[in-house]
Amino acid sequence: MNGGKVSAPAAGESRQPASVSASAVAAGDAEGLRLRALETARDRLLAAGLVFVVAFLICAGRLVDLGAFGGGSADGPTAAVATGTVGRGDIVDRNGVLLATSLPTASLFADPKEVIDPRAAAAALAQVFPSLDRNWLHSMLTHDSRFVWLRRNLNPSEQNAVNRLGIPGLGFRTEYRRVYPQGRSSAHVLGRADIDEFGVAGIERSFDAVLANGETVRLSLDMRIQQTVRDELMAVVREHRAIGGAGVVLDVATGELLAMVSLPDFDPNAPVNPEDQARFNRVSQGVYEMGSVFKLLTLAMALDSGVTTLESGYDASRPLRIGHHTISDYHAKNRWLSVPEILIHSSNIGAALMAIDIGSARQRQYLQHFGMLNTSSIDLPVQEVGKPLVPNPWRDVNTMTVGFGHGIAVTPLQMVAATASVVNGGVYRPASLLCADDSVLAPGVRVVSPRTSKQMRAMLRLVVRFGTGMKADVPGYNVGGKTGTAEKLIKGQYRRDQRVASFIGAFPMEAPRYVVFAMVDEPKGTRKTFNYATGGWVSAPLVGRIIARIAPVLGIAPAEEIREAKTSPAKNAPSHKEQMMQAIREAIASSKGRQLAAN
Image (cartoon, rainbow, N blue to C red; front, side, top):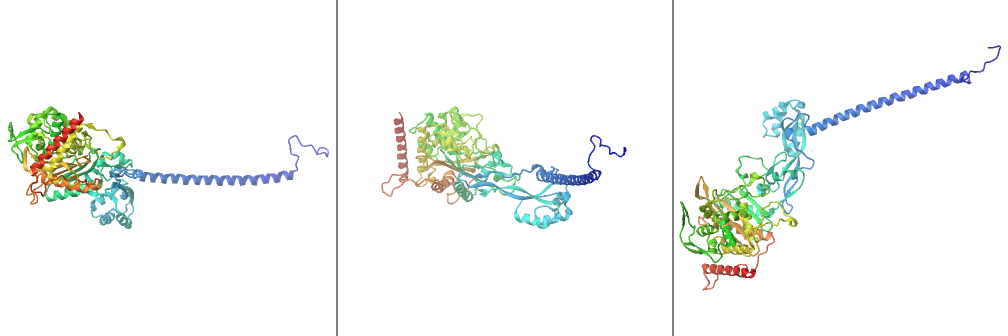
């Protein structure tokens, strides 16, 4: 109180009355409580949110695990699963016709740990899939892993039937199934892909990496031509009760294969049978002694090397004896034959003598250039391309027999490519199953001169006009070619009752565009062929029918005035032989004229 005086406040003390300070403190406490309550609520919300995020991540991780890795265990088929979001690339023909594609399908799997009653589930599934063994299903549904395949590539009705069962632990995964819309028609070319869409044969295997990347592969095949060749070849194989056949159409300018058919064939959509012999490709894989079709190569070598001319000839009056071997003619003329007549009448004796004049070393060199001594570089797996069988050692007798197509075995594919080089102006290009880009077409390798090629075109035309290939003639298309009939070598012995009958032709011969080859394996004679089963009776008419059907499709119109007069109603008409000799003289004169013009 200090004598009734009020003391002044100390420095720093509040000068407010005591009542005001108390209310302010009360208000501050209330605001603090409110802020602490808000802070607590916020922390709780953040914690709850974090729990939800963690739970979401766990669920997402589990889904990724199930979808990509099959639930943890990599046992069984899970390790072989190959899926993609796009699927395997398509294969199309040169015109864009779809040959192979991949379609999305449902595949059934199970998590055995989630299946409540495996025995009942196995019984129910066996009703949906009668081909699946109930005991096998039960073993799968009691497996130790968390993922097992039960059935791949289901159709919609099968998927619906499984859904109606309502069995816990079953699920579906979207995969892709390889489908071949054209069926058997190009089976040997396409090959197939397995259930996991890995290429295992044919183009599917050769271009597996490209197709697996989703890219489209465009082939040189023309399905219109392919189907025509298959239809005609199949009819002849059936008619002559043959064990098989082969047919090829090749563009002589590019080496593109427009058709490649091997019979018997198979359905690439069907399950695989490892024992199925129909998977053997007679065109690219089979090696055969081609017989007399080889004579066209012998004549081309002889003319190109200058060892003979079209005016030359050889003595074919009697069989040739060399060591223990006798070389004779099937339809012997027993006389001296001009070089054109040797090809027209398909003389083994004349071809053998011509081959001796060529010589072994030169013969091998030409055959090497023609692609006959090495494996073809076709766009197929190496396992599906046959290796030629050649003489070793190569003696004089081999030179003679090779001259008429025996003692050397090659694939039809090799024969076709070599013939194309003979008629296209003398340039060899390997056969190809890919559609060519004209802007980057390879130049090819010259194997014979343009003059030799022209002479050979004239000679091959004479074979069809007057010789063994007459049944291949097609009015308006100026077909040329050569027949071949070769006995098959079985256990070291040639079998007269087991033959390969073939014909190789080209058209139109004034400017060849396509080579057509047909081979029938072990044909039987019929009443229609007077019991003959040779190339002239079986394969030559087959090639003629193929040409007659495909030429209009390929845009080749029949030429006028192209049917050379073979007969005439006139009383004094020249005989067949006189017409032939006149045609030979004209061919020789034409050859001389070209030679003089060139000089």
